[in-house]
Length: 171
Image 1 (cartoon, rainbow, N blue to C red):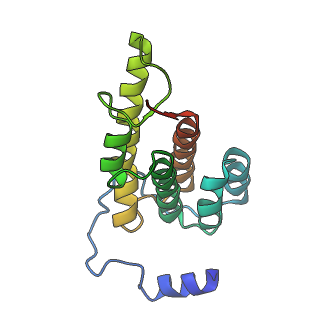
Image 2: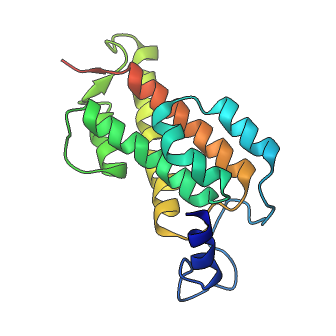
């Protein structure tokens, strides 16, 4: 499979037909290849099966952008299922599910300011992650090109997944 993917990349199938002179990314643009150390680090840090199963092989093969995209899609799928499949996906899903005013998933009773702040803050983190990470990695080639950046984003995805696992359906 890896040889097939490399062959596709070699002939330009995975590249956009219109190449920009400079990448449209706020994330690093180095083309450093992955190392065994980074793979070992990935394997030791990424322990949630939903994330590891969709991103581990891609990360190890150097497909950093795709590994990040798949990790955030895993969050999207998990949240959708946990919230009993509300409308939409991505940013719209997270806006609805974690809405501070009428959330479908909550962590607390939201009776104190801190509990309310937690709901508001994570609402923004989930929606922002879909808008600022999932969408660019799903719609742009090589948005994330460095192993270190990919690993940081996948660790963040794992945190969001773990937090979603702790959430309960609101009453």
